[in-house]
Image (cartoon, rainbow over all chains, first blue to last red; front, top):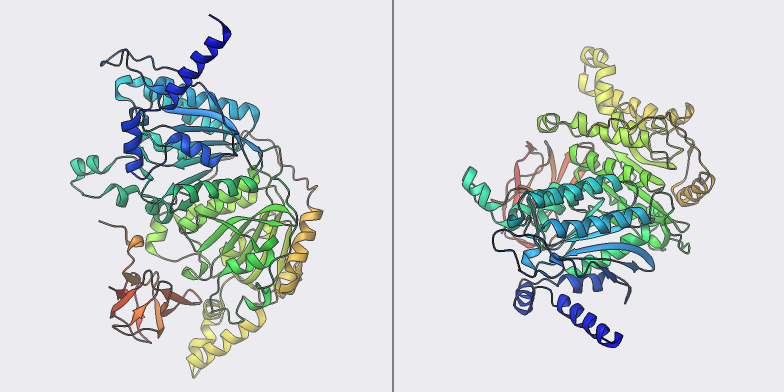
Length: 514
Length: 77
């Protein structure tokens, strides 16, 4: 047969695979308001950059009438491409082929691209849209999941791993996204749970819809399983592309440097933080007043909003911002906000992203539910993460920094490299009310007018201790700065810490309070 | 069954505190994000905002009231 004919045959074979699960199945996918796996890859990657592998892989199941059944690509597409020129490895489960169910060859395609991503040290993006294990393939499909989870763990902290949930992702399947760095969800399309509504109903008698149990909003606002929430698939892909610009290809590199840009003039840093420490404000405006082009890319915006995390740039270099949010629950630390910030600090540390921490918090949230939910163990994660991190760490204390909260928020004592405080900073062991009541208990109770004495002692304490100068006198903070100097000093700190050396004794790994 | 955090009709106190201001009246139309009540707690005048747009169905508190954690403050219909 002449080569020309063979090329024709190849084209014909490819054409067949490109049909996915066929017209009917594709129509069903569209009716659910979803893009097909191929459309998703095209929307996500640079134009014409995608190269597909393992197109002709076939399943090898023999039982339950599977013999002779054709499943194009075995329900998953794998390959490599670029996003804004950065190389990425991708897999996308194809729901139109046997519901995207995971059989052994399907899993082998995924693990092949995972191995490739790790070997080439490039980011991995997994698009999940699958009914779950392929029941006909029995324990082989469980083995497939296990192989994926093992690789997720192996790659963790070496290459960025991104999970996109664009359909159901239930049962064991949810653990791959949970092991990756960033999870993206889309309203009304993403569904994640360990046991679905049917099982919950039959075992517990409780009724709930898929959406209320594990929809996009649930994971973006309540569980914290999702990091980015979008209204549409296209918005989701734009978020992923933007994220890729902030992070490096792997843990041996720095994120790409961009052209430095001054913050926008409408964010005037001196007008944002009210003088009265009891008045709230949006700390994200302080970040925007500091960051290049006032650009702040927030992560987990709706979950544990009492702490703010995300990426921005200083002088063109990616930094991770962590900031207490006085606008939400007074900016307290609690179980969820500690978890959220701790994980982000570890992410930045793993990928050479310097940390900027903005402090303004009343302390930890008191409450029986918090104590019983393990705020000790969860709060410890934040201390652990900051203590362990060796990337440059810059801290700016804006207002309140009291008690354990002061220590936890990247203090000098946890080896912050630079600690700056605004003149509005109040750094003390506890708030004036609480402290005065304890220290002057006797004077207050024995005074002819205890209430007047209490107010007087609170004022005295406030004047003496609710300021940055006591901490500055001990060198716990490096310098008290004017708010307008913040960006300039952070740029300088970043410059002088670019060759930072932070040796730690060798260990296999620590035991963080997971 | 829906998680209380996804409840966009009822505004509750996240912690015990004192109501120092009530910005809305029963029957008033509010936009999402409008400040409904100011709660003094955790060294802060916390602004509790409307989780969704609608008409104020009920205002359960007045300035000076001490409220316990989880207490319903304002509901929207």
